Length: 116
Image (cartoon, rainbow, N blue to C red; front, top):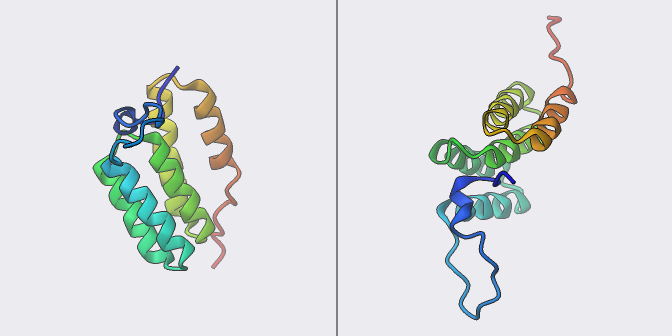
């Protein structure tokens, strides 16, 4: 089974101990972005996720999350790019099931309006 992201493997162990392992850098960034978005600070949330994508460029999961946030912010061309990158990563890793889901997200985006 393919992992979500190599950066998450180190903390993917069961968290049943009294002292759970510290969050990875990626998890910290995603948690920060979610809190910012919840507070209505969408721009800062997107910046934080973009940082996560740059520092963990081989993590399809974070690229998909970034694409989702961009879609919700109506930044569709950027969302398309994020989903394409996530799709490429998933196909490269042989993660067929998740690649199919990512392709569905990409194909579900509205087409660009070129009428001016």
